[in-house]
View 1 (cartoon, rainbow, N blue to C red):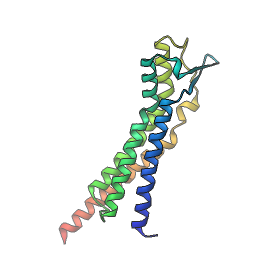
View 2: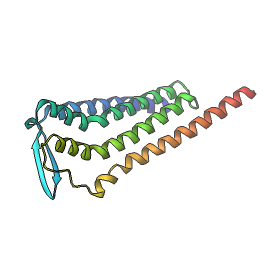
View 3: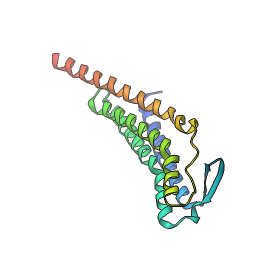
View 4: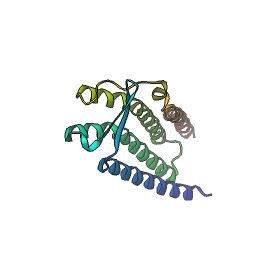
Length: 174
């Protein structure tokens, strides 16, 4: 498959992914999904509509916070594909896109890992729950895949930066 065709398909998929992510965010905001936490060995469940408006805003913000990093990732993928479409393969802009994607994925992993403890802490602080969520190792290691992908993109970004510098030096020599 030609690179131009792959880039076109990639742009369509990035757009579709952004649209689907935005639709999911709207759905979560408008739905009345329950929040379920395990506290002191018992399951605590409450529908979002049962919270006050200010508490709903905080809960929604915490739940959707990593979406901002996801949209930043998609934007940088879009930009990177655009650079490739213009024939810019080993440029500082490319390495910056890779680095921003890597950092965004790592931020997503951290935010997703901290979501349940932060939500639990907020609900406990507000007196909505009687205790903090029961923590287990699954909550801590659940986002290792995003962390791994983020570190891999950081590595690619560093390699692309070296390649960009080498290409620049080669062009200066000629």
